[in-house]
Image 1: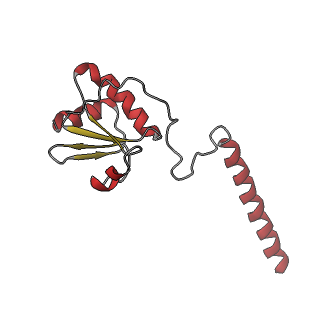
Image 2: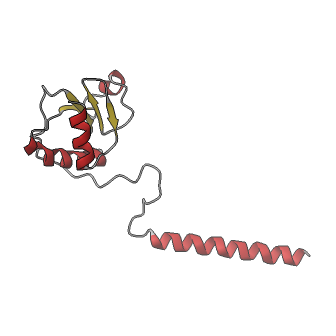
Image 3: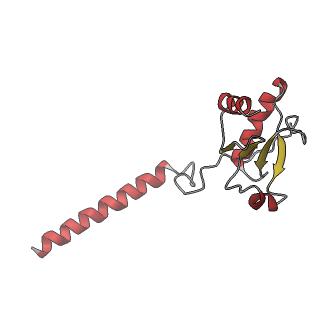
Length: 134
């Protein structure tokens, strides 16, 4: 009976090691895949900030080190020719903004009417949210 338990344990161990090796080989091109908090896109610098307007009624909370914020800036630059503007609120440079506006993560938008949108939005979804909260 003991030899059966030993063989069963060995088979389970081989399966676990095999699955681990297979999973590692599937993720070798993206070693952070599956790690909590590591699913952010690569941080790229957006130089077009024509969508920033200190007088805009919708605040955009972001940080230059946030990949999703940079991706959202690309979307905002695509909407800029249509007249969409947001007030820049850089939480990376002004840490007090986190607490002052109860920001839980970036990117976050807060409209003058109090509506909030936390997280990245694709172009059509962001445009609809901005239109609904002018």
